[in-house]
Image (cartoon, rainbow, N blue to C red; front, side, top):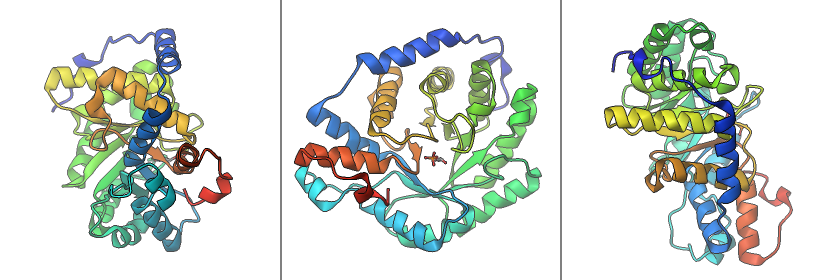
Length: 309
Ligand SMILES: O=C[C@H](O)COP(=O)(O)O
């Protein structure tokens, strides 16, 4: 849809209320025992298993894809009574030059390949090159593109420039789904986070995503709450359901629970599935696997046993 500034301008955000709501929600609600195991298994379905490092290699990407296809060791899966369940992560997320290796490794599995693009993580490249990078990643086999926005457009309130940029990226993605990374740690105010979320959705983002994992502050619950409220408001105004992807710095199974509680309380159960919710994480699956092994055996394995995730 065209830019509609009236959907966010003048929209005040109460930071202390957002912080309080995020803190109390996750402190008051808890899931235990078998329910906790089920929520952790659900978290696995929603992970974009990620490697975005300067020393990535084809071999590392292939190992990561093998893990995405078999995220739990067989004794844990069987111990949970899920021996017959087809359990995979939500996607594998890599740099554009690694897409081909991931696409080959995941071929026929139905697990999508996500690629970051548009000059990830800073986005400070000419727009035509950023759009060319999207097209390259799609040609290599990416099903989903995680774009980064120009933070300056937000910091200067240039909403039209932000809308134009994201719309052009949406078009370059073609059939691929587009996740818009807002890099919320760079946006200074929650009001900016709300406005940038709205503009990204108006410009055609299928998901809005908090962070690249490279900012000083990445996914936090209060910022996620503000983005989720924007999703809710956008949905109420247009009838469209947009997905949410918190990303960056999430390493513990209890964070997987906290974000799912937030999604369920704010948006409802239907948001607890990979079509509408993903975690962007390079190192959370290991702790989830460890907690699930404890659930099955009553013992904690050394984290080095789950090093791959
Ligand atoms: O998009 C995903 C993030 O880059 C992952 O960040 P992380 O390495 O801190 O888990």
